[in-house]
Image (cartoon, rainbow, N blue to C red):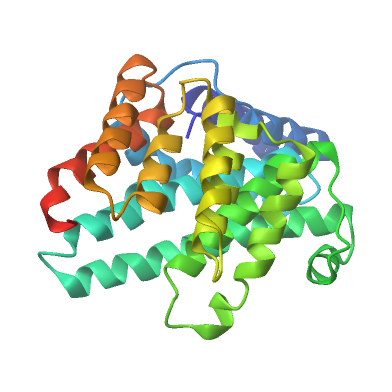
Length: 288
């Protein structure tokens, strides 16, 4: 969601050239570069991002079909679908649950499909570099290059989120160890990736897996907080939801920390997590 209007406009300018000349790999790659690059223009209007995100995702995904070897674009597409599903579909489903359970279920199913889309794009990009990557992941022999950590993070995040929304599908749930292993592979390559986001993801997998260790998950969340350096609200929200559901005081304390971080560093990611923290606090009586 950080890749915004500037990158879209640049990409459209490049794509417009295709109407005036024969398609060129160079032009396609320039458009892909523009869409994959983080925007230099900060955006603090979450609703505006929501309204524009679907167009950018479709444009990026369509372009990726023409340049599947463009790893940065593949990562941008995977991250975009994952974040869109989390912030604007799955969260809507949670808020709607009490008023319209059927509509909430439809939204959860849509979110699961979007997560699956993100997962497929990221895994396909990993497979392009290392043929048989998923097979090797199953065998415990997969390797990851330093520039693939972002792809692995988004693949694992989308995979885990899809599993969480598909508990009635045993074949999907059965992949939980693979998703967790992929997150671990990325974590070993770059523990501080995403200002604590990757460490937080690994902690979530540890807390969620059968037989998982709360102590190990807590240690990983501690690492996530260190890597976040007080700038990542998502770490505190994730910790509250993973480890404090049986401790109202800690749950509330962590969510208030998230709100403080979001207020101090109001980037788009923190805005999303701040909104979630506020909703969790507003509905805390339903949880304890």
